[in-house]
Length: 414
Ligand code: HEC
Ligand code: HEC
Image 1: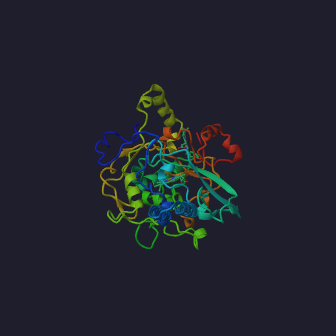
Image 2: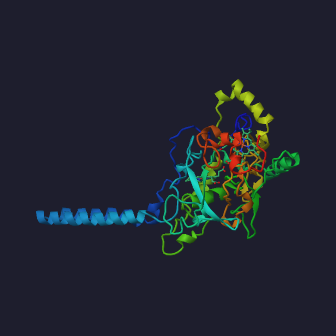
Image 3: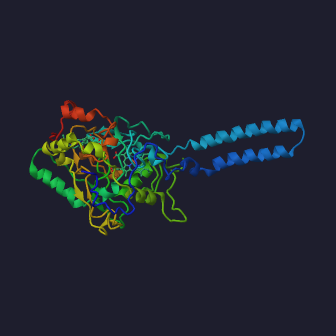
């Protein structure tokens, strides 16, 4: 089975096929946000150096030249020091471009980079560490480390083809949960009601969660807004608040401002670009082999497909989703796709006690040891960094059952 049925996808108007490459360069967000926050930093360096240079050419006499050069050098060093300082922006972030973590096999793929989540357990409840429980690799915070008693890693996920996942009917995901519970085979995933932040009105609109290791998002817009803010440190329309640890006196995290020409923000552009990507292709040579075909049968036969649900048909074109803010486009609607996931949360014995949510106020403690069944499309590009923590040895450990020595898993695993 291909990731998406070829006859269904024969007119993928606007869908960009992926060319596997490890050196995909980014066209979006390749602005160094450090410069944006304080554009005068680089400017002042150049202008002061060139002003001095001008002065030098105007003066005559060796002494004057030497004196001017010494002053120039001094000024240059001073401005460089200021530049360095202003570029050491204390806003919390992990990277300046999405491709730092989403680049294999191409832009918007996955990678081996993991993000560290932190917090502590107090009276049986998880409390997220500073900045929503992400230990940022860049940016200083006096609060960092204070609550870092429980640490967990989260592997970067693939974004290619996420537009199709967004277009899956939420009722299909609910049905997955009902069928698992009715089958009483010891498997019972839970569906997450994830908030859709772009939905208008004061009441919180929710959709069936499907993105992130905890299915904490149902809309790609909300999920990308979360990443923009929490990975790149760029506040945006859906995440306008400053981190409490950076509220006063410190330089603000940069805002996602609309492009004056297109009126689109970086967030709008990103989401649109991701929706135009096709799922990572499978290896056709390998898939055609006898062993692969036999493997597919075993996969079904022993129950992997109960959670790694192979097939969906996306909603018809023009269906309104995400609280009525997004209409499924023609190129994503009515497509048969094979993501191999139920998008539900399961406790398969790998939990680390850290729940996650779209925003801290939506944290559900009961999800602490559960993970979303990861879609298996594109898995061959994640082969060196599997499972939520990117630990490739964990599936084998899971199969051998040795993980349950540490913690009893709640659900049956084939
Ligand atoms: C430092 C690494 C890193 C950077 C930079 C990063 N991400 Fe991610 N991304 C992750 C990790 C880790 C996850 C899994 C998060 C989780 O649920 O724990 C993820 C998950 C996602 C998801 C959910 C995908 C799915 O199918 O479930 C989306 C969408 C996403 N990122 C978009 C973006 C966008 C857009 C950017 C740039 C604004 C970005 N990411 C930057 C590491 C990163
Ligand atoms: C009870 C539901 C369930 C069943 C049944 C199940 N899985 Fe999974 N699978 C999961 C969950 C949940 C994870 C993520 C666990 C984690 O990251 O800690 C996972 C992870 C994986 C991964 C790693 C994927 C990645 O992107 O990192 C592979 C590979 C996998 N499963 C294959 C299988 C195979 C093969 C079978 C049948 C032997 C199977 N699974 C049966 C729920 C299930």
